Image (cartoon, rainbow, N blue to C red):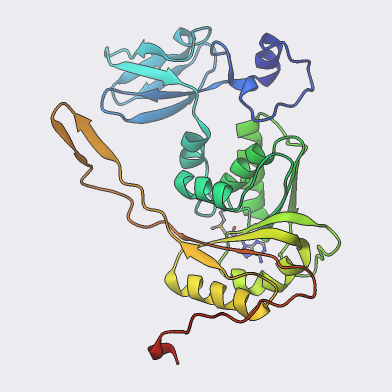
Length: 302
Ligand SMILES: C[S@@+](CC[C@H](N)C(=O)[O-])C[C@H]1O[C@@H](n2cnc3c(N)ncnc32)[C@H](O)[C@@H]1O
């Protein structure tokens, strides 16, 4: 992305970082920008605008010079005459098309995590693992420049991918972000660094509950994103067994797209049936133990 040029056009001094990356993506397309090209069937391509270059599709090539200097939302035609709508990718588009190491958190789940873990400007957030950096982008954008995101990733190769994705989205390093190539719950102690929120997207979040409890401020929120029902159960039980959290909540979100065309208004035939579950719990004050639950477990569980 041509951040310096975009910032200058927006009247922002060189070296200034932007809250969300939005300022850096305003104005006409410039060399180095990303353009998402959508054909009449809704198929999307991501092109980096390089002067003098052609972008090849199966419906002919597009001269990228036709886009440079054009406003966002322009329509360009390929050499075969197919029209393409050109827009800068949104974060939701970017996270779905970015280079992946580990599986990414889908935008619908990232939105749930931000909302239900109450992550906003100024928050200090601990994340593990960073994986491909998709959730890191959402967290960084939510906390803004006054907040902090500390992300742990135990695999150096995934950490490299996460860093590249975050820097590609924001147009450079984020001062609010510390990426640590280390295992959360391992040798690298995080004691003494107080966090408002902790977000875990990893195979075994239950192994980190003690570490998280030491890192979270009283009243802070732990959010765990897990793929399977057994992980959900083990996570909930580990949080309960720790005793330093309130009663965990667990849920999933299902998004069903709709087809709306004239009188044909109905749910789409296909949907993404499962992505993951979210478990949240709030840290109790130091030394306080969760009161015993009033509700009896089901008979079968006794
Ligand atoms: C599913 S991926 C995370 C994807 C990421 N949330 C995203 O949206 O791109 C899970 C990652 O957690 C990392 N991981 C697992 N346990 C970890 C731990 N204890 N500390 C740090 N990283 C861990 C794995 O290496 C893997 O990259």
